[in-house]
Amino acid sequence: QVQLVESGGGLVQAGGSLRLSCAVSGSIFSINGFNWYRQAPGKQRELVAAMASGGITQYAESVKGRFTISRDNAKNTVSLQMKSLKLEDTAVYYCNAKAVWEEYWGQGTQVTVSP
Image (cartoon, rainbow, N blue to C red; front, top):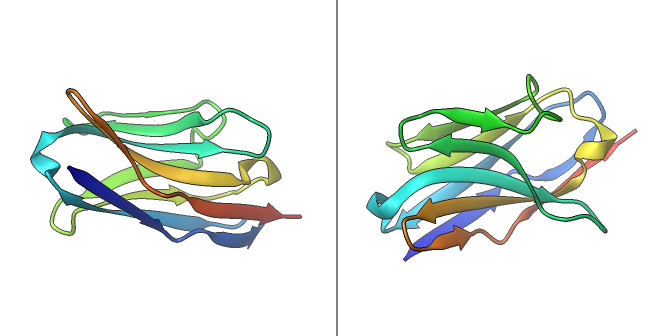
């Protein structure tokens, strides 16, 4: 089992920055990739950023150049640095971990971008 706990969400003005963190615990050795998803009201959950076990990263087109996913193995955390935030970035952000046979989710953290 793997437990994921997000933190760092909040209210920020457009153009501002925010850093989300995901504390990872449990059977970390089973994980082969970490991701950040988001879900805005009335919309489907979408993949925002992904990091494979080898460190290769991928981003949704809408956040490329503004968001950065990173991992701190010493602290067992996965972070999402967000800058130049836009109104449309408002959503609940979820940390996700994928193992060979299972998938794990955090409880989500709200990010609200105001004008």
